[in-house]
Image (cartoon, rainbow over all chains, first blue to last red; front, side, top):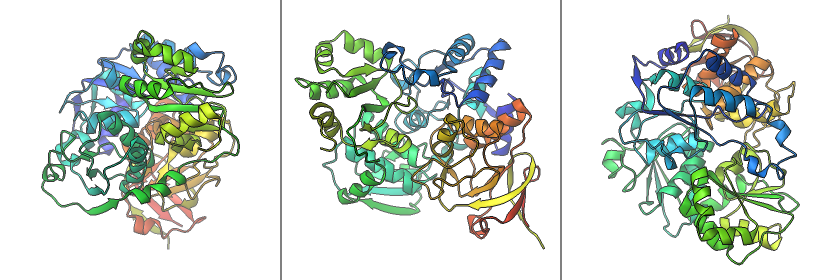
Length: 374
Length: 146
């Protein structure tokens, strides 16, 4: 409580408000979260429990213990964190909790971490959450409250910069690259996008996660698509944009190169999905893999949540998965230090993990045909 | 005469150190996760998209416009503070709760102070040259350029 009151004070919040749910990133057992793990341990030892539904980010996928055995020793805190999270009442491990039962409602208040989830919550679902961070989220979950400031207030949800997308034959690779560029330019200002009315919600997830990596963006309005941007007037709350930026297809080439790490050798690991894929996205990947085989010296990871993984395993697509040799997993490619060289279709993974950044089609081609670059 | 600038205190403590200034927004997660995982005694910025890439920020007063990046930021900063491998303080134009949560948690749970001061115009901050001695007072939200 002390922590969230102090935080609220310094950011001018005059009160705490009730939250409907929480999502924490304090779960990953890598050896760089010792101090935070100690705080969680003290919380659990004190017998405190969460007051609201609380999910957490993905954990290491022990179904692949053999493939991951080289890096498993780095997860020194895994057992302790899992035990303490369970003691305080946290369950459900995914970066896309809105695909499970932790689905925010329009206009309600939340205390979430995980930048890609917070931007989805605010933009796509119209819920309200600041980017809390991996200790405060636990404090909010335990108290059921968060400081009332920032994106909880309507006036702070006003768009500031208008991005005009000048082409309409974009694919997912273009959209995530647009996301990288928007985050870079917008920084901590709220972007409004014109020209993406037809974007799917899962691609909004992919675009948003990119902007939340290169910028401190926690809310994006897409005119004609997201709930607070029925038209340009509502997105800017009847004000004018401070700046207008045009994005054409050519300018994305530079973005794709800038954020990609090029390796001399072909990848040992290829990861698809970060944020984790929903069922529709997994099926898209599997359809593309139909009749193909992943090379034996490459691990091809398709990252999704537990629910989708189990559903795919029961579906007709399981046959394609098995025959292809791809691995359907709940691991987080960002925080699982997979051996390099690494290739990904995820803008977020490439930003944080020195991976080669390619389209899904190219990732599949490389993993099945063995070229370094396709 | 030392120059005093008044901002807002985001966490308490008084420290003095050499300034390291960047005009580029700073991702604490991208910069510091790698040195932490490596148990490095230094704090070389691991964000290869940043102009401070490979620079050691240990014991510096780190000055940037505002923080960016994912929400592990708070406990990454907390870990840097507890292991004492990173900067001594942060000054920026626009802070955010994610960043101050790391410093506040260090104070509440580990009794360690790490002052953060924000709300000082970057046009003033960018005049500070690298290596200049700066005193950061997180108790009253002022910085003193010595």
